[in-house]
Image (cartoon, rainbow, N blue to C red):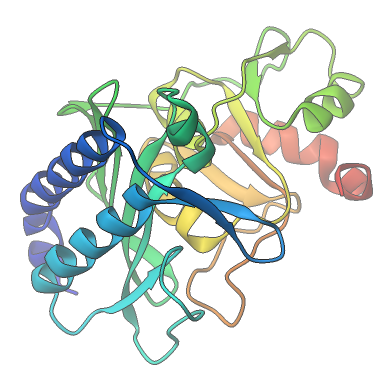
Length: 266
């Protein structure tokens, strides 16, 4: 997709995300159903389905011909499309169901395996993150940047408790932070500099990651596996291994610590 067309998606995408957020919050105010699905019994709610349907209608109109991959859509990767929307209608459904604030709506337009445009909206806190490849990342219209430096002492790190416990044995003085239930929002906190680094455990999916990946990258950071390899989306598998996000210099330092200890984080 040409750069001018990509940049032109920013404003209408923000409008769509705000509309989706309003729908989710309206659903939360009433009596809504929730249930579980799949072998892992992941939660689903009426809001997941309603927001998915709205996003599908709006986003496919914004980029006609683009494919569609969503957590709430049956099927797997759509490898017939080089250009595809990858969407999580409610990232952090457990948080949404329990009335917590740390859930989000995550959307990315991906071309040839890497995100072009990303939007992440946390409706309760009214935070909207936007990124366009090569044009930086913003939070509520203001540019954001991942924290500089490669030091680990005093670094604020969030992620699964078992990862934080293991990592504390490798690097003294890191500061474990409260869990952010939406993985996409946890990674976006790295992009905005609220966290110095974040872990994601094995088993995260394309729809959890694609939008946040571009946010982190455009904010001067990196999101990779434990070998330092960037992620590819809409491949034969939508599931990823353990991941690290941080500003570039700190990311490199973290990879140096964990690359040969990947089995400890399995």
